[in-house]
Image (cartoon, rainbow, N blue to C red; front, side, top):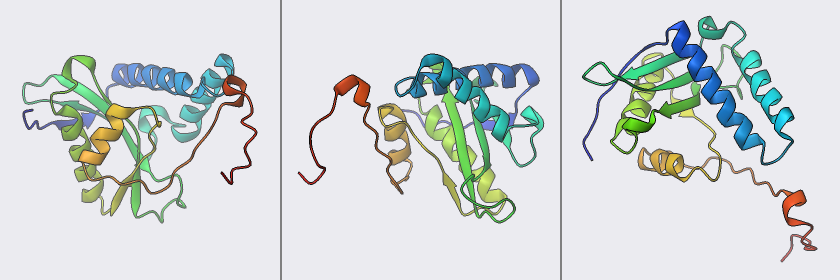
Length: 172
């Protein structure tokens, strides 16, 4: 695989709308495994409203696209304050979303986009970049592991509607 480099720039309003639509759709699909489809879609919209109240111009958030050396937009990312830390006190940033567009996947652009995001937050004086990943997103998990990310906490869930009760006590 080639080593790629990307340049980040702020999204245009049209790019922001497309990224928001994609992100909310993906979030709703992931949440839809655990709740009704309409509720999952509403939760995805609420997340955007909560964390990006001013949309593209929300202070402290970077909504960026990644361009390759030919100037092609290969993906996008949303980087902002770590939601687990009090505003103005965070030494870490949060990767809310990262997306490499299908034609550019498996060509090193995910690693390049992640490295560019890390450089962006390091230049702001942040000491870490944190994120969540859905457990069945094996491609993303492989990308993060190969980039040096480690599991800091693990949240597990079991859909009891789909599998029924196990009858176990958890002490097995």
